Image: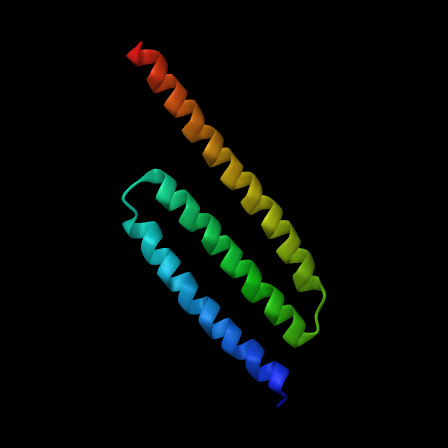
Amino acid sequence: MSLFTIAAYIAIAIISISTILTLVRFFKGPSLPDRIISLDVFSANLLAVLAIYSVLSEEKAYLNVALIMSLIAFVGTMTFAYYLVQKREKSKNYDQ
């Protein structure tokens, strides 16, 4: 086993711990923006694990899956952000 392989497995373990902590923040988050950010970080962690696994298994198809997942995660995050902005503007209009 090479040093690169050992480092990749260690990286997967560390990112997995980060993913678990992100899930805790998602379920425990006090507000909706906190949960949206944790969901975005969760998807980034999954993409990192998928990319590392793709390198370890020497399978390029996983990188295509990671690319599609990143696009979907980005669109989802932007949709939630747009929703929050619209909700805030609507509440300001009601206050006036």
